Amino acid sequence: MQNFMTVAQAKLKIQELSRYVYLAETLEAKSLDDQMIKHYAHLGSLNKVVHKMNQLGYEIEVDDVRAALQQTSISELHKIIRVGYMKRTRAGRFK
Image: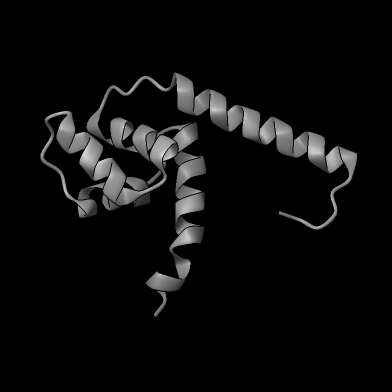
């Protein structure tokens, strides 16, 4: 988080976060990729998503979730998740 934030910047950040929460809570997971993206938004971990999906009866691996996150965005939530995931894993991809 920034050290100092103006009121206008704070209001913008609140709007962005509210939109993210709304999208994560209202996404209808019609496909397997949608389900993985939604669970990643809630859990924030590839391994936790794999564990959750396996509990639901799907046989997936970490590479399946990684591929779903890295593919071209299929929804607004996926776009937000993908940007964050790519920033988070940048150092590991450019070794």
